[in-house]
Image 1: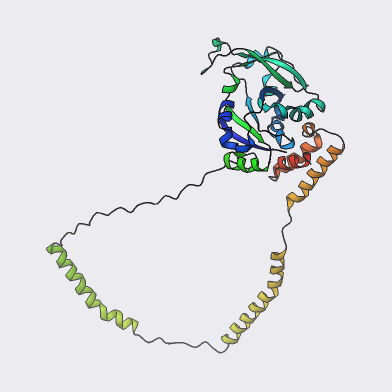
Image 2: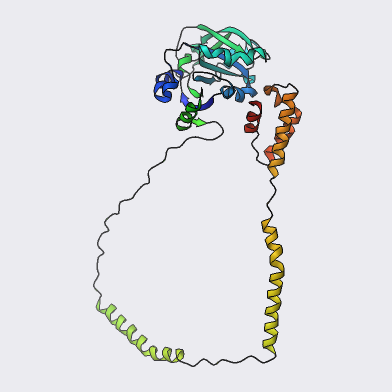
Amino acid sequence: MGVTAMLPGMTFRQLHDEATERWGDIWESDITRMQIMIICKRKERKLLELHGDMIDHGQPVMGIFHRPRTEAHLIEEQGLNPKDASFQFLDIASSDMGSWLQYLVNNEGWRRRTIEIFPTPISLGIPNQRSFEPHSILCFQHPDLDVIERYYMPFPIDALSGKAFVSLPNKKAAELAKQQAEILGVGKATKPQAPVVEKPTESEPASVVPPSPAMAAESIDSITEVESTGPEIVEQINEPVVSIPLPPSEAPQQEEQTEQQVSFEQHLRPSMNDDEDEAEPNENSGLESEIRALISTMVEEGIEPSNMMEDGRFAILNERALAVDLEVWPIFLEMVSI
């Protein structure tokens, strides 16, 4: 089984140039590799992105998706709606093609054929368009999609830029993937930033303004006023404090109220602790068990993983999971890969 990493903004040429530096011994430059095209249903693209997680392979498998935009009508004229399909180009070792495509061909009936890759016409005015010679490559297509004979691109396959989904074949590759790329479902790897230390700036010396004669006179008057009011303040502070005892009838009543309050708090304390000790039930655990049970049932019924999401039972549980923020996709991958 492999592990899939996503490298943004890459081309096949860049991946080949940086392969030895990125993956070290995992990459063997003398292995024969080839480029093929995969045409799948749009809603099954996620399964294709993580296809390597369920396949044993010996070399990195690189995949980049291409979405027709300005040239989309050229594909639609051949009978295939581009919005219904996803188009992926794979760079794969010849020795890994059998294991990578065996399940798709034997179990799901994918079609194996060749397709012509043509440059888009210059008249479309696509920016940064590059000309190249038309050529044919091997193509594997989902059986439910209409067959097309020609595919148009504004640049060669090697110059196709986008998110590269790279499936690496072993545990060491998984460690490299975590360091170099974004692991799907986890997030982007961020580099630690050194703390910024601000250098203290020398403050300018404060200017001292000499007091004017008027200010000096005012300060002397204020000091005189404070000295004159000082004895009065001292006299007020030194007045004796007279304590007035409470009537005899009120003291026992206050003690009785205090005892009642203490006994009431002691009566409530055990029940409050009991409530705090009770653990809150996990609402998601029951729903997760239902999802796992349903997937196991569908596997026993012989339903293919690509068709499970279309099942009405799965759709109902998926809506419930969305309502409680429960991630269904990791559970699905775990169950179908067992």
